[in-house]
Image (cartoon, rainbow, N blue to C red; front, side):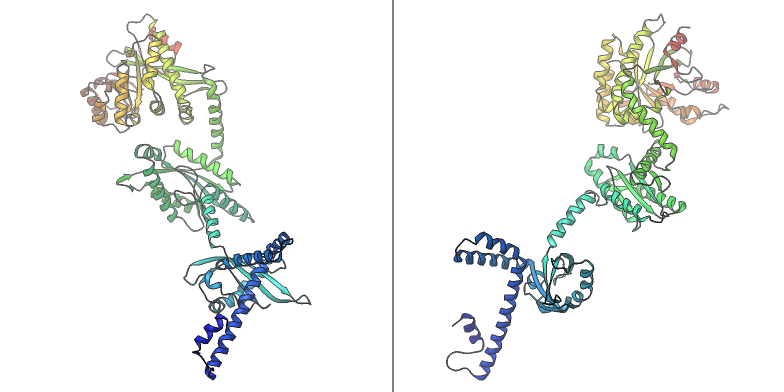
Length: 623
């Protein structure tokens, strides 16, 4: 007796002997259900084999020369393989109108529903909405094309399925029934999304990256079919972010970037675009704003960036420089808009940071000029195009010239004499400042040799300016020592002028470097004093020889002879610290007399002399 029949007899209470009417009725019902179940299972297997018919055909072709036993064995293995895939597939049949006729039991493995629950929950959707979508996408064809959809699992999670339907035709070529296969592609969809996120979103901040930004802007441009669309592209760069990274570490910097990006993202509208395109550079696209509301939106963003940021017990303060390009006025392509907004952003940087600038066409001319200078700079030293102009410095008490500041100029073959404010920043940004800085030291030493050959009462001194980048990346002691030795000079004739910002870079390392430089007898001047971050403690610790009072304090000297308290305090402080006090930018007699009365030591400026070419300077000091 078949084990299934034995089980059914046991279920109806049969032990031995004849069956009662009630037991017979129960047994018939159980057998009837078994037949239906068997029919359904057989149909499911047939459906599975239909899906893999190509594989079966290949299998038969490969094994056609084998024995029948081997063929049957291979077929059974193939059937078991298909059966094992059932948790990832289920099957159904529908009438031509879309009504479910059957659903395989494997729907429970995949979606958690019994086939009855699935039909009840999704029958109408498949018959109406889904049929419409499928028909529109030409899915129901003889060859069967897949269609992706999402369905809620019984546990509430979302499942992604790939649906393929095959129409079965009768002898008159009418659709008799529709057979469907649903495959679970949830993991594939999730993997596809992860890959898409990696391609289109910034890993640190989670906002769009440059690639996604370009796609989004291109879509905006494609949507402008009427030619009446307007939007603003903002290129935002965080000011002083590099300093935070360099001093506190990249982990602090990364956290700060995340906080800033999150706050800006929350302040934008649904239709706006926000992307990170570089280390501390962001692009914001603001849609459909007039000039007034656009300006207000930009001010809001700048205020947001200015707020104090708490990162691991550090209270950090930054600002933003923003450049704005308007579509379509400032560009008709993504590349043009980003380039012009970038140019405008650098204009904001050059104007002191923490502001915004709308792009203007003349900025392009300026950029082309800068690019020309950068290209020509590499050959300028070889062509001897850099020269010094010397601005004399004199003792206030006697008006005797004791030194000069060597101010670099570029004798450009096309643009003529170019002042340092037009090319020094370019040299720093490109790294050329290191090579140029070494030339400045060498040329100053050689100039001192030429000055020493003159028959003067005293040996003149020359001061040179040292850039932040040169001091950070160059071994200043080695360069100075080598140049002094090669020119057989005493270091006391050479002075280097450093800004307060350089002094604040890593105090301990700075103190060590300056101590070594001082061992060469080279003088140290603190330039633009009073405008930076000076403290008395580090002035004493770094052994500064002289304070150079910023021109702004000299300009503030009152014509009526009343006191200038700040200037008086700086001069008094310098005297107390036993430092020489130098006033720069002296242009008027009343300024000279005020400084003389306050016992300032040295002065320079147009009241004494403008910067002079070397030949003119020699004539000036030997007259």
